[in-house]
Length: 116
Image (cartoon, rainbow, N blue to C red; front, side):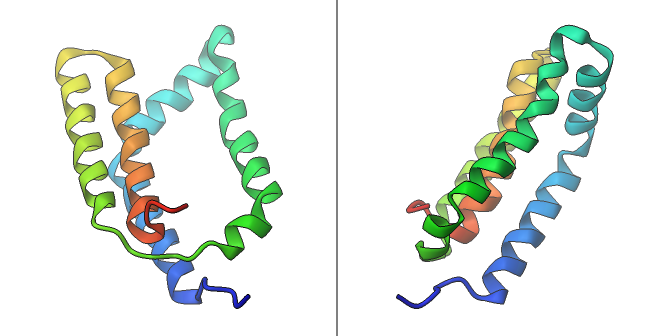
């Protein structure tokens, strides 16, 4: 089976993830500061390495999935952004942090489509 991922797909994914990260940077800074300052929340630091390990272990399966752009990603980004703003306005960290995560997930979904 031919590899359906192209350099363009990878660049689009990396670019959208970078934009989503920069757009939500204040939230990620707060999450990082909490993880580094609170011993009870230091488990947060494990999330990124575990996600990278899981992606690496499933790289062959991911390679075979077709990247197919989806407008559903924009919907997830909008929902995440709204949740992030609501959480900031109401001082609900869970909503704000979940919103930032949804913005990142929406960026991935925009490039990869719902099949991945």
